[in-house]
Amino acid sequence: MISTQAWADAQLLWDYHHMHHAPRTCSVAVGLGSHDLGVADVTADLYHQGLAPVIVFTGSTSRTTRARMPRGEAVHYRERAMELGVPDDAILVEPRATNTGENIEFTKEVLAGAGIEASSVLLVSKPYEERRSYAMMRKLWPTVDVVSASSPMGLEEYADCIGDAPMVIDMIVGALQRVLVFSRWDLAVPQDVPSNIEEAYERLVRQDFTGRLLPTQAKT
Image (cartoon, rainbow, N blue to C red):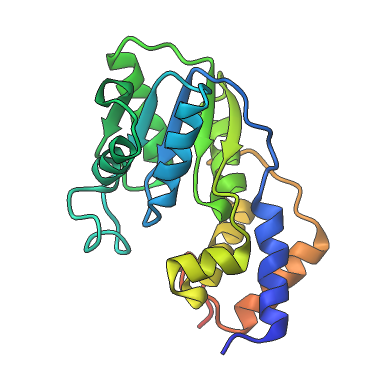
């Protein structure tokens, strides 16, 4: 049973993670691999809106996707986008990346190999990964403009869609931890984190929403 306070704190973090960017035309749309096929849905919709002429889906597998996406996240995303009417020749697949840093670096390689120069990127992620992914892109690919995008679902609707609310809150907490520490590790540009967001994060950690924390920060 998730307490009212935990839901309220998760909502604070959920809202903070959103960058609130207005979609606009970019050189390429990049769908970051994950357990959530909704990323492919959003990317396909942006393509159909004419906001990017080409898509890169990037991702191998992880502990949360190995069983449900055995051919790899990027491959399953491609198949989903094609079901939604995106033509095969508009999709590039990067099947090796196992983390966001690799997503970014390997996507650059795939685009270079295809002879595509990108000056701007529509970066599509899970809703609670917008800010972390944006901060990492600004650090690791500073030459492109970045526009963040994700599913428009609210927190409770998203948790119902995923079917595992505690896991979703774990991931929201883990994403906030990475926003806090990745800039110190030279993996992301710093983000302003208001005190009420840090306090909500700390309360959720104390309530054992620690399943996605990095080992050095996990509650013992």
